Amino acid sequence: MAVTIQQLIEWKQQGRSLVALTAWDYGIARWLDEAGVDVILVGDSLAMVALGHPTTLPVTLDEMIHHAVAVRRGVKRSLVVCDLPFLSYQESISQAIHSSGRILKETGVQAVKLEGGNPAIAETVAKLTAIGIPVMGHVGLTPQSVHQLGYKQQGKTEEDAARILREAIVLAEAGAFAIVLEHIPADLAAQITAKLPIPTIGIGAGPHCDGQVLVTADLLGLSDRQPPFAKVYVNLRQVIMQAAQEFAQEVREHRFPPSS
Ligand code: KIV
Ligand code: NA
Image (cartoon, rainbow, N blue to C red; front, side):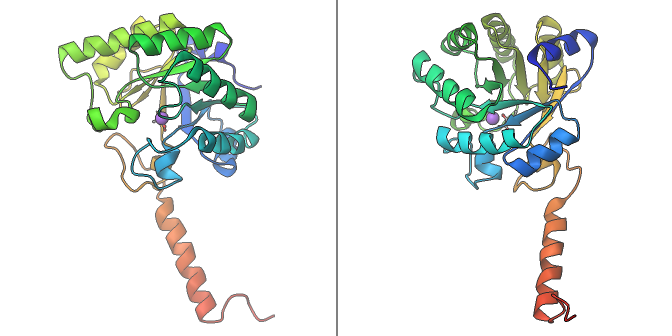
């Protein structure tokens, strides 16, 4: 049975942890789906892990749609969410509707995700959800603001923690169905998780969130730089290099293909 947004909220009430990972193409999406991952995020981190950009800022809406279409083709069960890239939703509510509408209509994913929780973003979330576009929020470290925030942990001062809590509450009130909490102290994430009726999905936010997400390239050892909170479950970089080197050696020594 395909995962629904309603189910995610029920799982929070039941205390069942939600499992999310990112994907950027058909193959990765297919394997994550078959592995039973609940939510697959076409994150704008694909700018870095799939396209080689230094930040998430350069990726375009067209590029996100191109990748989301491929991801969607690989998925049967997982709920698929696609990031709205930098400057595809901040200009105006009508821009956000246009971009989100393109994502839903052209890719078949079920929801969009956007960053931040200031009043303008909350208003955008309220409008999108009012017209039937499910929205996932994202607060704490928001990589689209890297030039202001860096990649540092957020919410360390009492004042900043209060701001992040307020933003999370406002996003939930605006109709967001879930919210990513990135790189904030575990006790702040616990507090937000207890306060909100919608699931929190942590990344570098401690163990008390309703679910966890990682960038799949980090999990697989494929990223140039791992964030401090990532865990490398398998070093595919090494596996891939070794396979390529073995192939190269066999070709150069005329051992592949075998002479029958
Ligand atoms: O783009 C991304 O991969 C994300 C996750 C880190 C949540 O937004
Ligand atoms: Na993102």
